[in-house]
Length: 285
Image 1 (cartoon, helix red, strand yellow):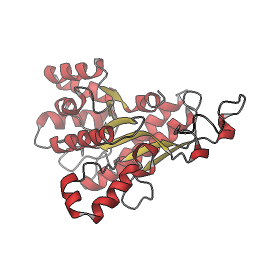
Image 2 (cartoon, one colour; image 1 turned 180 degrees about the vertical axis):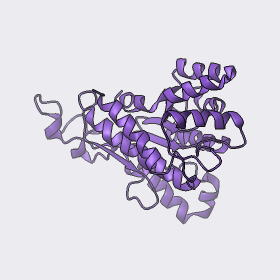
Image 3 (cartoon, one colour; image 1 turned 135 degrees about the vertical axis):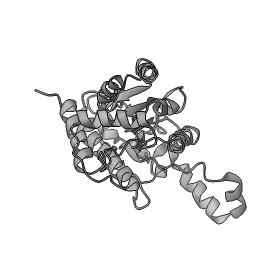
Image 4 (cartoon, helix red, strand yellow; image 1 turned 135 degrees about the horizontal axis):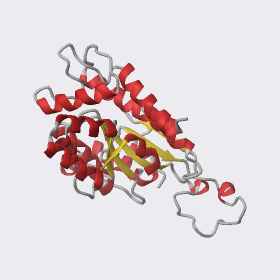
């Protein structure tokens, strides 16, 4: 019998196939491949073969990106909230967007950004000097509701009205939701897209007040060299997660590309690249 996460991983891949994110065009090129690179096409074909993709028209890039975000959110909804024994709390998982009432400034670590936004809108010179580096819009977020004093004091009298009044976890003192994780979803990783993820991560790091949330990237990129452009090094993202790491390793082995296989091994052994199935467990830390 498959575990919860194994079942969710299979459903995740099926959603990518059935919703037109992972596709193969009439020329036999998978939707996550760079058609100008033979190695990229060969690796992507190997992955799609293992995942038994059906051949049909390639989805439009922007549509694929939006669907990829949605499917990643659904995978986390099916897994992370069920890990209460490891990470208790009242959790919410959502996509952020222009029409969403939830913004980065809705969370306690970034509530000051709304004030900055209002200032720059009313002062052109201030806007010109500050730019918009402080504006951050992760694809998918996980956040925790603050707890009431009644709930905190269950079992033992922990807090009162005199001390611990500035703690973010206390709802009774005006605590806002706490951003727990920022998940950037990049179906493919051309150089500009990789840098966008890094810029977003640095914005979250520099502009926070309080605890830094988990900052991760999920991708379907097949090329180890492009994965390395974002995964190598530390200081900005926690880790890069691949939508099908086990299948990627098999596909790279099948190409016989020793350099790519060696680079992939460095990323995996160095804990800079993991499988999508590792993500919900890592988020409990």
